[in-house]
Image 1 (cartoon, rainbow, N blue to C red):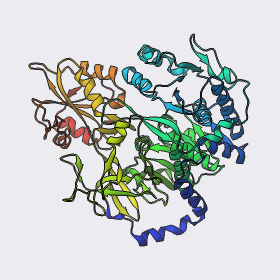
Image 2 (cartoon, rainbow, N blue to C red; image 1 turned 180 degrees about the horizontal axis):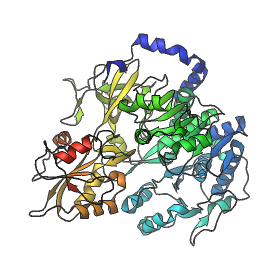
Image 3 (spheres, rainbow, N blue to C red; image 1 turned 45 degrees about the vertical axis):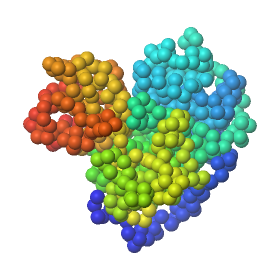
Image 4 (tube, rainbow, N blue to C red; image 1 turned 90 degrees about the horizontal axis):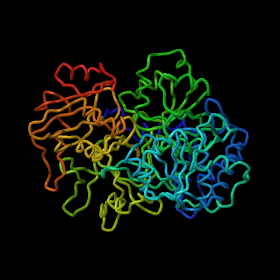
Length: 608
């Protein structure tokens, strides 16, 4: 941490005058973020209807071929809501939704919110048993699948526990006119919605803040994905924190969104920020670094949603004329590292970086409301940063059994108090929810959410992200469960033990996967076969890039793998005893990693 990152009271006060014009919106944001009454009828549906009433003819959604006004968007969502209602979808029903980024996806989610139904947002990159698990986990009574993903669904259809769930198909269409022809056994949702009423269904008046809005899949320490509950209350807090207090977009702004809409960054952070001010969302199927600036120019985008990896991709692109004097003035996201923060801001002329910290399942969020550099910002929530024992993987407790707060600037575990104002909605699995709660933290009977993340206090209720703890690391903008990868490696012929952890590569965001393997006696590693196995069983972001071979695997008294020493050694041949391998970008095999190749990786000769 640089001393320049510390925020003293004097520095904070000196920074305030430039934000005075935003004070009314910021105060409104604090109101929404601080609502305690979870019975209140505020929801995503309410926010969309409010935006449609205030900005009926302003653009709401757009892509390369289509543009919808707020009036048209709300009317389309209403038609779909009435169609869902006619099909039996009601308050609290879980509807699994699997579409790539397109206008239909946001419209379907808006329609479900109007009925108080819950959209389970299936990760469109999942395949095989992981995909089947994601469907079975939430027990959906209804399935909505895009034509572009029917093939992936068909591969796992016979693994679903409830084969009676009603199935709706959405054409992979470029226009609103033709709903297409559904495959056999599927219902054409857009055809059902055609001719339905366009007025807001009365059900939306009964959707409360305590009701579930989305189920968001998050990787944890148990292997397969968990489904965290995103309530309307948390969405409304984002509407206030990110929309009114953070970005303060208005009806003349356009937010360019390339992040996948099965992530909270897209459907909660970016969408709520746009709806709060009546801004438009320009949606792209998948991120493209080469097309980014031409898209910004086409839409005259003033803001974009990011993750740190996306920013690094843009910096790695050669300079172009289209990036100069671009229309962007702000951005919102997380994971922008201090090492590239200033360079990104200067090269692309972005004035405001609204970095934030939040998690799908958590009860706390930080937002860089005051536009300081290298911080996740400020939070009104009650939190603490406590000392953490890295060796034993647990918070430190004093002689009386309570946790100890870290000093200013000292890295520690971020925890947040669970209260009526800051409730913890948790996961669909109650046992997993309880495992995320720390009790008797500072006094008997209190309860705090364990974020699993290391942070440091940099002053004036601002924090700086340090690292993630536990058995999950983040790579390519995705959380990777080490247990899931270990299970896949354990299924490879000859692997007796597999330990997976994240390691840093210079010039990248997050940590890529590395595996320490113990092979059966007398076997040698087949690098090409292992790469093919990983490609078949895992998404690209989850497959390890480095492998080392071990004679023995050390475990703790509770038979957990000891990873601390392995993480510290990383992929440095000078610190690793035994064979060491790497899979270079574009390669279909693992190759021997020696000192010369290690130096080339460290000097960023390869783009991972």
